[in-house]
Image (cartoon, rainbow over all chains, first blue to last red; front, side, top):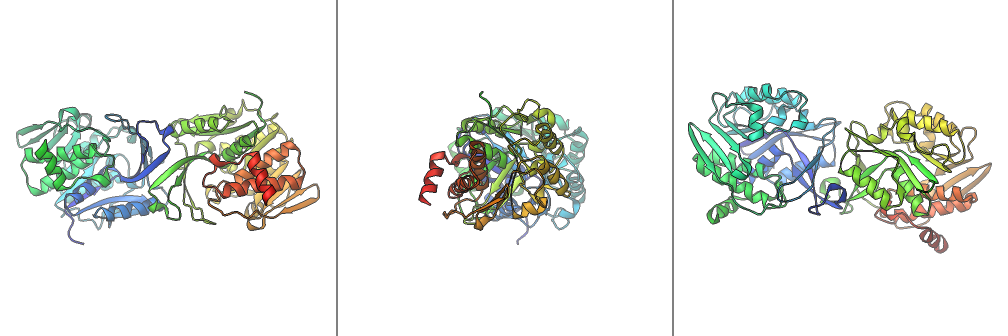
Length: 300
Length: 300
């Protein structure tokens, strides 16, 4: 294949979406299967915007693992770095949809998930040092051996631009204090992305960061690059499903970083991509194209 | 509630059935949620035939656990003995439907299932000694503490009729030799039910067994009671989904045992109930009524 531009690493899941909206899980009758997991979705979003993308992750030796590879291929994402755990199941995520702001998840990732069993040898063939953009997540630090594999990959790369660390903090996945591991990973990144709670886990911005982004929810998004601070307001859309909006934002951010855009253009573009996905039922299968994002930006 | 006549113990699951037939799991787009788990289904089948039924089982503290209780109530099964494990998820079972004879399952029961965490204290309030029919399964012996709880319940009851031990052997759930535990449980039962492979796990019929049933698949079913042997041929139906047919057979067997039917009538009736469910897509939600079984027996 042609050279990868965007390489993400971490969580994958088969998301099972209710076909009945606004009811608790107990009352959902039918579910639709979708590709999910934040860094997986980021790679799909970047591919949809025309970037050559790949994801480093791990699935179970089951039909859902087959599905993950097939779906990635369908979305134009290279699945060469998807490995297989022989005993654990491919993780599932069930959600409830209570628009506009309540989207509870039920994870089937017990006793752990294949993507947290990634080791450095699973990454050996991946172009971690040379890829133009590497996207790592905080969830990848939650458990060994994924923690060591994530940190080793960041060391291999040596804080070269663009190295994005998506703070992506999920308290339920942590059994110890995340902060020391977040500090290590952040010190090897050039771009940090997170919401207010996630920034609180990390603390202040480490040396060497080119771009720090804080998602402000209803207040939009704030970016800081080399002393310049830009706040971009949210785009008003009717929210159908808030899940995946942050991943659309992430994929669009990758596109803007690689295009060398200035800060405000990049944040507006990523914001619009997130808004489009929030207005849609799907996530991975409804990531917006360049034309769709530009159209929303013109009309907003 | 009124006194329970049929009390089953063991496995429960939320079964997720493909809405697309004849395709591998990777290609299924949508799933329909159903109640599942063999002894759970047996209680539903018995209730559908007019018997007051209850199941001793355990679910997770999640929306699917809520669903299990709601579905049991809807089917007329008492859920008073359904307890909750605070950390494990309610188990899932995905299936593929390749009629007439290939119905592979993918279980999400890792690292173990709540129903294998049943303890004697979960059974303390259940009428194990006095219920007219107790239905236990081999899967309940696969792991502690369910193994001890199952054997303790059988000891409490003291081999009183009717005590059914459904051999229900699933090799994937066992990490050691099942035979010694099967021998113990069978020595405390009055009725044994299983297919050829399951009987091979148990060995010969222990002392004190009133009725031994071997399911012969395409050759029907054979029963032996007090020296009398009856073989009942299968009923020809177009198989849509073979899963759950054995549970319909089990619920019908409970009905026949409680009615005091003679062997041949009981086996013909149970056979017909199984055939009806095999000809239907659903399991728990499509258990046959008395009238439906009798109609098939008349037309066959």
